[in-house]
Image (cartoon, rainbow, N blue to C red; front, side):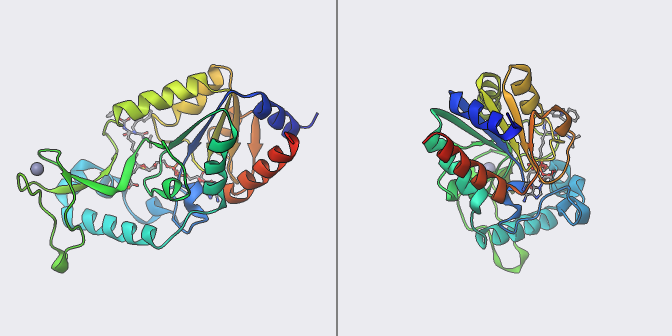
Length: 247
Ligand code: BJW
Ligand code: ZN
């Protein structure tokens, strides 16, 4: 039996399928990844732009970078990879989608109950009193928004380096990884923890580990099956073959 048939058989027998996504899944929508050549971290310094210290030191720079990214994301749309993942929720008896992405493209593709490990770029909150901020974000003359309750600085609701992930999101993700039958790691370099532990937790608990990525990663050596193609191609093709297989 070829390896792809093994995947189809394991999917057909699966009670619970889980998918972890990273920036690569949004690449075909035109959103830059972080660590690929030409990616965000090739041009920008993560310590300056994705840490609380960087934000406090140069709030104007960090805020304008996030406003620019929000604008880019607003001008994109979900790609066939996001749509195939949304379809998976309709087809498998139990399905968990875990994402490191902050772009909300899974929601826009129709996915529900998305576990957002690194928050999202559309919500903001006050660094001092933690109140959500729902006011205007793109103010004229490089003005920064201020908390309406306490006057504190407003930051995006994303998880920066050195910050804890949302506790329930991480717990739910670990629970899904340790109980699923097939685990997909799609479009992630698997270099950022604790998200990078999830595929390993799944594999150690007996799940079939499938990597969807055109490039090799640190995870590739542990993957049972590697779909070495862009997720916008590999995932819809896999779902088409699967639907034929179970007919
Ligand atoms: C395609 C494709 C196509 C391209 N189709 N694929 C244990 C060991 C070592 C370090 C640590 C550890 N535990 C914690 C740490 C520290 C740190 C960490 O992991 N550092 C490593 C870099 C070494 N982790 C943290 O600080 C985390 N917090 C934490 O652990 O708290 C507890 C704690 C606190 C203090 C001390 C110790 C513990 C928080 C991590 C937050 C990450 N935040 C960011 C920014 C979010 C906001 C924003 O967007 O601005 O999240 S960084 C960035 O990386 C972003 C991503 O979600 C994340 C992962 O990146 P991703 O998605 O994998 O993207 P890439 O670019 O890396 O990869 C893209 C992949 O796509 C590539 O493989 C391509 O080949 C592929 N691809 N086209 C399919 N078409
Ligand atoms: Zn406040």
